[in-house]
Length: 211
Image (cartoon, rainbow, N blue to C red):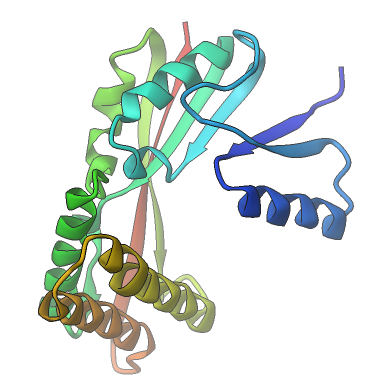
């Protein structure tokens, strides 16, 4: 039959946004639904290619999601997951501020049950399932290969999210918020730095074929 794409997210606003994009781009073979990633209301083995993007890192028990990804993928189908790893973020200049800022951000997320160092764990996680041809790759966005303005805008949006929304959830002291803000601001400055500046945003991808 024809190829069909189905997406799931726990946030109704995200689903609404995604459905709006389908209309904007005239896509007719896809749809999105609000659902719990640990308990999707779909049959076993229905998907040829199952993707989980930057989600395992924000759940306190990622294995519950991995079990569901494995269940809904058909034998011979591919499971593809991505996560971040804050230790791999580098910038020049402002290297010290950026490293300290993301370390503090990682501590903040860990206090709320999230793991922003989970990229390094993906291959081990997938090896717990009956998968073959498990491979790991790096997706590296940086100011050498991306347009600086949208790259900086994305980092800026995350700055506000972590230093405000996430920090409020954890009642983070202002001095710790300032460390996070200084790190993100140093990262943005490095993106625009004209004399050999460098800034990256790495994502680790891991995939395997269901046996």
